[in-house]
Image (cartoon, rainbow, N blue to C red):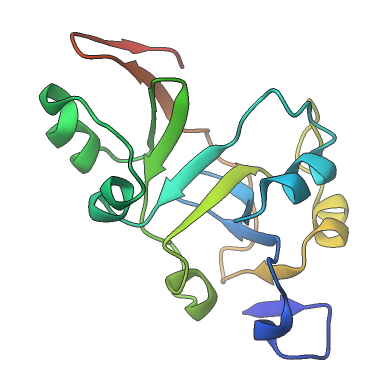
Length: 157
């Protein structure tokens, strides 16, 4: 089910902020990181995770991945990687939504105010589009974070 505050068509939203269940937890998704910084009241020095639909899209956006870890990154589930201080994850949309299927990449962050827990009312006020299924919007565990360089990988979370 897709809820939209506006009576106009979805295509009229220039860069929407989407509230949806991601592969790990409930999150705000958008291609405009400035909107996400404003919503979360977060410092602009702390970057967001960029989620790609597949490995091919990741490569098309000029992300350099060490050859040694390409298969690890391609096959990883619910894992965020940091390569050269750029955080990304490869994840198919978990919900069967046309809105999410048409997006190759987006910034992602947990659906809460910075440093606080999930609050559904806050999230619904801040999102332009809400995508929900029968399992509703509920918190789950965050993704594992692995920092990768040419020689080794290190688990951060």
